[in-house]
Amino acid sequence: MAASGATALAALRIGGRVAFERLVRPKARRAEDVPCSPEAITPEWLTAVLCQQTPGAVVTDVVVKASSAGTHERHQLIVSYNDAGQRAGLPRSMFTKSLPSIVTRMIGGFNGTARVEGRFYTQLRPQLEIEAPIGYHAAFDRQTYASMLLLEDMVATKSATFCNYKTYVDREMAEDMVDVLAALHARFYGNDELAARYRWVAGYPRWFTIGAEKMSLEHYTRKAFDAAAHVIPASVLAQRDAVWPAAIRALAVHDSEPQGLIHSDVHIGNWYRTGAGKMGLCDWQCLARGHWTRDFSYAVTAALTPDDRRNWETDLLRRYLDRFAGLTGTRPDFDQSFLHYRQQMVHALLMWTITLCHSPLLPAMQSEQTTLAMIGRISTAMADLDSLRS
Image (tube, rainbow, N blue to C red):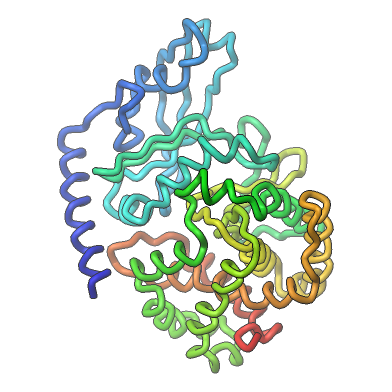
């Protein structure tokens, strides 16, 4: 009840702020300003945040084009520069991620995920040797929950194709996804620097617990089991009361084993493929410190067809362990890793039960078709591997 009350109060406060912004239509002009929406972006603001390292460069015009909406709204910016900016090769096309509405600020601002993603792009992305977008600028207002990210246009720079639940992930793509995850997890594996220097990256158990309370996750998971019963295997439906206890038990590995940087939301819709055929990972708003099996289990169960997952999962785990050992000098035990793989599936499932059924104060984060496809794949893996009894 306390969590619901806090959520309702936040929604009222955010609603008042958004109404004010739509009436006044404030514009961002200085580097320290946080545009409340893409329409608030001006050439002056872009000059301040994009041209600092290029003497004489000036943004002369910007065109905003709508793209998509979910937990954030995405818009494309077409940017024009003076001669100095053109000679410097400053980005002429980029994408924004912003929170211009009540519902997007509730999910991205109130929950803090937009602030975390902005810090990822400015502080951690430069340290990672993986395929992921470049962040040009990040701004967040703690009072209004407005947020603005300026990100690389991967279509323009790398001829990228973004994946979705209809994308068939073949063996080569799956192996490349595993390699990306191994490189991500290896960078800070067992390194005290991650917890000490980047304290804003929450430990996964804390990230999960706080988010579960704010979003009434256990309650809405029960509702989602009713709504998605037709895609969930009978053996998992019969154990529905075991889902939440299994999720709590599965948190233990994140405290008992060495931690690293994990993405936490590696479903197929957050992957893209470059024109050169390399798999890349985007949407870093659920970043956390935790055990690598959280990401591995989620990626494999959510991206692959059930038949391919059954045929490839052990080979993909061995490939991951090989890559991880080569990067860290540490090779986790296969059997123990496979056990954790089975256990972490329930956390992958919970990312989609709350997507299917959630508070009316939160936005529709994915289409129903996408959500049911993810729930079906992950719960099928749970049934195949009896993950709720692992």
